[in-house]
Image (cartoon, rainbow, N blue to C red; front, side, top):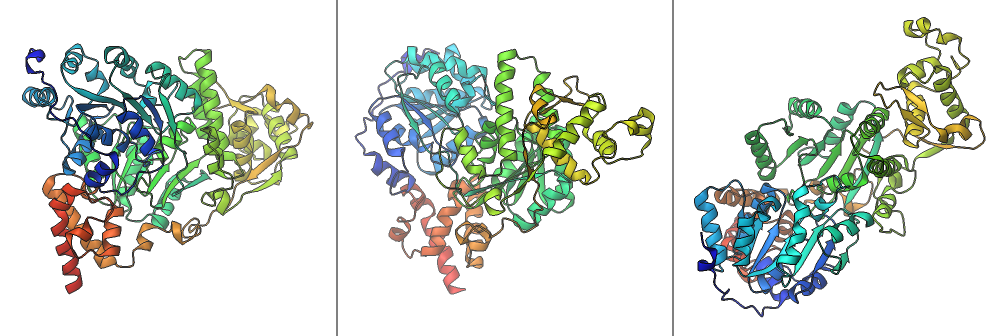
Length: 618
């Protein structure tokens, strides 16, 4: 196809005010912090690198300029499901949006290309691998482009947890389209990653807009792993029964088993991992997005860019590899700003497994050194005795002056104890048994077990045999976990689970330094629920008009099913809350509700007003 023959100047040259677009199209009165500055920079033709937490309103930073500037905005998005979801939401707002991806047949792709060339689109979403194809670049050179938005920009980082090689090619946009403004956006990037994004995307001269990383509505909780399945079931039953959530596991087998466990207990739980066929993965993700109360159990293959606002909890049954991964995954909870929980259990075997995976990887020494630093930071968050949120934010260069009051270490401050003698015993036992055994065996020796394995090895004769009876097996597990987490012991790099001494442990072994250990708290089943103030109560506990709430949700669900979109594409929960609270009597009053723009007012205003009248008459 000769794209030049289709080329035409975009007839619309907009002089619209960004605030007017925000209100008329999206239904909001004012921009959030930094949004206005970012939008004005882009509208005026400048480049921007944006770091904003999940749920902070990143998409508006390029969607509003796309409607203000003349031409079509090209949005580079890494996931098909995400671009389809965003396009559906924009169409509901009356915005002319489309996508180009591998799910389309030839006719659909051609129609979309024609719409771009004739200036009929406000936004076009495209995957990076598609964008860098010569055919696509040729198409863009013959179209009128208003801006380029590179979403999930941390994917360009080769040290990151979501690296995608196609992102490295996106720097060519700066050279091939020098007069088109570009914006790169991410929710997860420390200072090193921010620098890498700017360099690899040729955005070194772009203005940086760094919003605070804090997500105050998320309660962070990390507990020692004792019986992970029971702990998960107790947590969901006590605090999130009936809520939508995500459970992350390290292996596919664990994902399948956990999903079955939850299903057997009456929950709607679906597995998601790369071992499932594409049809099942797509179906499970679709159900998660469109149905209420669905729990998705997944590997890290799931989640990037998930735009579902009402995920009430994210649970980790295994330790993430880095704080970037942890922040990204937990950030999928509470995008609507409502109370949500980031819950995790972790144990010694998690630490051993990740350290073995790291040391056994094919990366060079520099790569392994960076990954060790990332894992150490993750372990530091797990073992900290002060506010977890302060530690998490500090890692990303953010600060919180006072403890947050909404994490487990703030709500239930852990005790510490003088571990000098216990640590000496533990390290000596590792040494006396030849640095060839795992933690269970070492504990048996310390506690004087007379099992056959010890008797056969002759370790009942070593000086550390039976010298640790003052501590329980679980207490000793905690000691060993903290020693490994803090680098005093390491797992055998050959992968057999044996613990070995490191050079760092020498002063401890000799008793030359003191060490305070974290006493694992006994967490009550009700911990965290309602303990952080009425402003952070569960969503279900905040609803006083239950029949009204269910009626509005049913109305929304009916419209969503009719349109074939997730319910939150019609209205977010926050908008439903405001409708229920203010009970508008007319379309003009409905227009004042946050999230009700002109297009949605015209499409759904009368339907929701009728639902409210029916409630009043009930």
